[in-house]
Length: 330
Image (cartoon, rainbow, N blue to C red):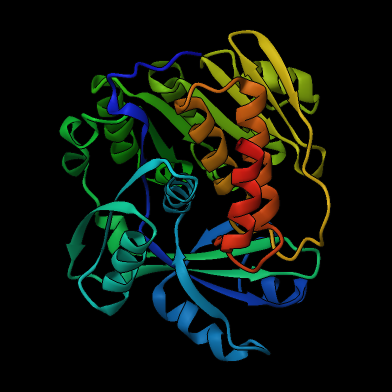
């Protein structure tokens, strides 16, 4: 796949929910009592999250998050150009998120709102799965006219997170305007619960606007209705130029215009937390694509990013991890 070098010279723009992540460890029963879905995501209000925090055995950590946000931070950490488009509150949490993005060399294209900044309570269970309770807050007030074509005029790739599928008008505007601006459009399906919600219109969106479609096993099954991985991968790549199927510890498969590439997993270390694994996989893969690498090498960089983030709590890879990834690229 060749990228138009006139389009942004490698700029990856992420569009999604501007959120702060609240990360804590608990068991499966806690997820159920909290009203969550094991390994999935449900929407709740702010007071619901606040009421759960005292129940954690160990106080949770607070870090910047959001799927597309995590991805563009990863792109910038690899030395690429990243920009994030979203909406946050006007209070201290919103300012903290913006300052964190700047410190990671990500350009924040952030609109401020009077609503509270959104946040996600990520409950990490002993099997390293994460179950999310999400309060969108200010991020839910992002309007279709705020993701106009001008927002994407210098982008090589625009990554739109699947969570925006809960807002049909918004995601349609983001995808269509990114396409009009000449960028390659990437949609990460985000969670099987999201796919199930958007089943009636998702395939049409992919057909019209999406060049790169990324899914894990559960998301692919929800999207295609197929158990067989090879058949599911073929379906993912049927209406998009590139289809990606991530299969966890077994690696990933990439279908590029009918040609399949198998990417072996990165091995070693103890899985601590899978939060951000898919987001960071996308970081490495998209960084590889905009730099003209082969599908196999782009996938290996994605695999390395996903592996490193699983060694720590949360979606932030420490600098020693980034050094190992950069060594792989070189």
